[in-house]
Image (cartoon, rainbow, N blue to C red):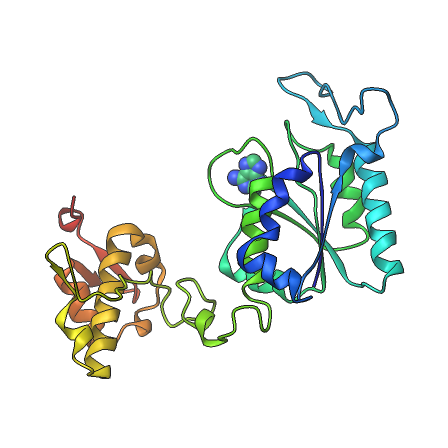
Length: 273
Ligand code: ADE
């Protein structure tokens, strides 16, 4: 997969040399190019922004540097044999970035990231490139960052670990908390490793039992407990067919009950502090 990032802070993308993404690059599984947007400015001050039409606070990133940068990056990619680019624009106004979207992006051969600073990029840039390629405007959460670079790191890491051969163990993402098509999207429960006792704290006995069935059940119950506590919306969203008899027992202990529409809901008084 080829990745291009156009940014006014190329050094912000240094973490792409580290850890999983860094190794995938070193192995040739990821071909990453970081570009300085200011290379496509032509005035003394390397201006990339200007005041917004219609007034208002902040500055807007200008059309020309972005247009010239993206044209040049796309031309370079095509020249070196890449195809099927998609433009990824991180913005708090984008669609939520989910595991499902990470899977979709991981199936594309070439992603071009356009992280903005200030109040965003002049809309005409996205409109222009949307006539030539898929454009994904994505938000990594309901909060506002100072710019899209941190979101590029987030998206890149989520996508890179899905590429064939990057994690080494294809099964490791089948069980991811948000893997698409999972029976029920539950959060993963707690995990433990050696030593068996630490500061007077033991490992749950069942994990030492060697009994695979009981361990799987325990893990599932812990996942239900954690999901009920931290993401009740995930349980509300599940079709009740996703829950077996033992799941229902645990959900009932946690204060959940099936509604006539097949979903589960929790009595308000059952919500623990
Ligand atoms: N840029 C600023 N805030 C952002 C967010 N939450 N997601 C993606 N890009 C952003």
